[in-house]
Image 1 (cartoon, rainbow, N blue to C red):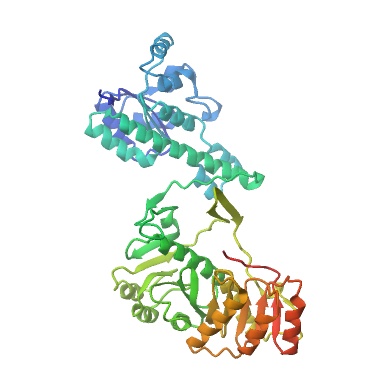
Image 2 (spheres, one colour; image 1 turned 60 degrees about the vertical axis):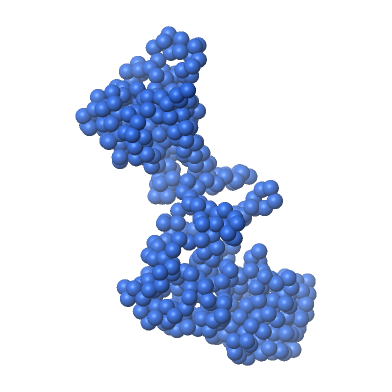
Length: 510
């Protein structure tokens, strides 16, 4: 049985005309009867192709400023009739309804209009009604009609009709139907989320129209995909394709470095989503070298990120390190040439875009959604709970450590000195273990902890952590506070001339 069908008639009603001319010329060449509306009709006429106005089918003009053009039984009857159904065929003849074998639609650009900051009136007018209805109807009746639902599919459709003289297989019609429902569901999700940004209905809808299959997921035996517009956020200058784990590390790096946007040159090195080195200095080269000193062992194969342009001198230093990804707002010409010296090293320029305000992750048989942790601890929100107050340099280090702590896996302790990460204890089951891990690691890389500061992502239920920190030479502590036994830690600090400040904000990161 031959399931191919030749296109004899087509309805075209599109927003984007780019790439449409070759299609209408090819359809005309294949003796396809073309129906159209409004601006699309005018475009086809201008191309020099005969076109039949939809009004000639419906005997009804476009009304309400173009809001109603195609919404008519003679249009939708032509799309939705089942050609193997005798009753449908009889009704088509009775009501003089023309068969429509192809529907080509490109919707009003709702998402782009919202992103442009347009007025609500303009946004509402970009909610397509006729177009979305045509897509749903044609995709539903894919057995008899092919639906081309986006400008992104014009080229493929042109290839199909050119290769087969307008004959479209059932398999291709069904594939285009799937594409169409992808377009319609994504469109409706964008509209709902626009309205729900104010209404806050208890519903979770997410749709990403762009996606790519990765080499594999977290491990080679797992399939992996990335859904999102990577090119909107980065310009990739060089290197191999990013992996699933690369993307997770890049995400962690970007979120951490956003804490230092607009500040003095800051450089961070991350492994497994955690910073293994970070420093802030007068030059990017100094920042890199002191970040590397934080843990030169873990830095091997790491993700590197800078908050300022990477220059030639810094690139020379980086080039001797094996690293997976380097991220910066820009690179000097010489720096780029040096860093491209390693074939697989990925170089990314980070663009300025607004990141999502929610975080999403799968959980059990559903998803967890929460507001992003957008609170950054600053000096003005601190409560000075001890008799001894931190010096100005200690205060700077405390806030520096707090920013790192916020982006390190819990339970975590971060030790810093002179705006340099000395060490952190990450992902431990007890805060004492996290502190001991951090102290041992700092000592293994020859950091002098006398005068260093400590940040904790949650409160201390007992004074054991401040005691251990004091014995290691740490002189100032930043923590959220909130334990019923906070006073025990305060008392210890007062007795041993330590400074401790409370932020009032916990920064768990699970």
